[in-house]
Image (cartoon, rainbow, N blue to C red; front, side):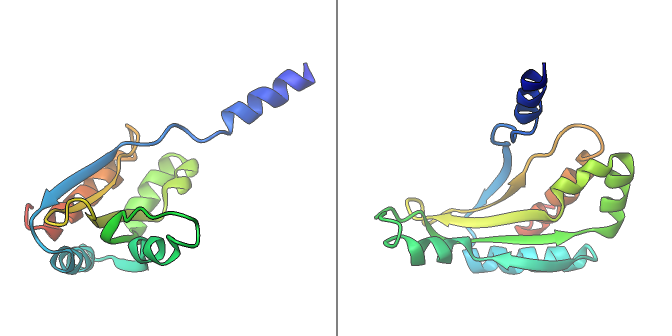
Length: 146
């Protein structure tokens, strides 16, 4: 019985399958989209907590890890939070802390350099849809679709 319970707890603690992403594509440059994203975040009354330069890191370490694959021309992830939205979703379920901070990525793939993609992870149904609506508005505003 004890081994079965431990196994069930282990399985329950495993991460879910990869989440879907909501993405928008544009012919705008990477620089224009990231500028638009920074402004959309600020216009929403939020502050960028961190920018992860994922594309630069992967390019810099490509040879170190034995790869010759060029993934991105450019790729950044912007992290930020909303006190109001976060409080609402975490009051509904304190475990929603696992989704904070919220991220929006911007990327230009190496194999498709004319297209810039902006997006974010899809969130579960229920109260987390408040976060998804906020991110969707910010992503669309960044590329002039809002």
